[in-house]
Amino acid sequence: MRVIVIAVILLSLHFRLLAQNEPTVTIAPDPFVDTTTITFSLSFSDTVSLIVYNQFGELIDSILNEQLMPAGTQSIQFIGDTLPIGKYFAHLDVDTHLIVTQFIKIGQLTLGEVRYGLEQLNINIFPNPTTGLITITNLPQEITKIAVYNVLGELVLNQELIESNKALIHLDDLPNGVYFLQVSNGENAMSVKVIKQD
Image 1 (tube, one colour):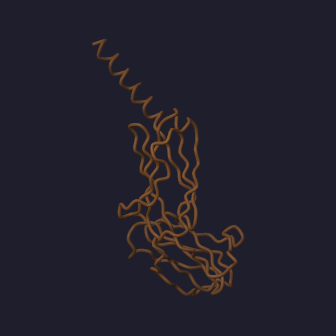
Image 2 (cartoon, one colour; image 1 turned 30 degrees about the vertical axis):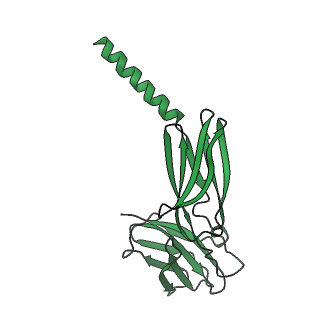
């Protein structure tokens, strides 16, 4: 009985050490327009491959190909300004670990050279994530239109404002996923990522 208990403890410690030594990957900004940064951390120096594929499984870029990397955090800039809008996948292959991280390329959503900021406009958008209905409050009078785009940059909803400082956006008919809500005065615009989920 004692042998079984010791074996269980050793297995638990082994799996805990494996989890601690597993490399981590983050990609920011995500979604991105032109460039984004892929950051990964290694517990030990190891041979690393970092490859980017598109949503159809086609090779986009072999950033690292079985290259020896030191322990610690590494950051690599990924330039995707010429890539089409859509989903991409970064494959980090380290020893026995393969980590796949999805990230999204979007189009430039601004309508003019000036881009409003959420902090500057103090607009409230809630709830986010949402199950279907989004409320936007504290809209300035110059905002006349609200549009929603999917991750491919396609317009899926376009709404003229009825009230000057409040709007209700219905995403009920759209599938779950990531969308970009854009408010505009006809010349300039700002956008924010929203998530629809049940």
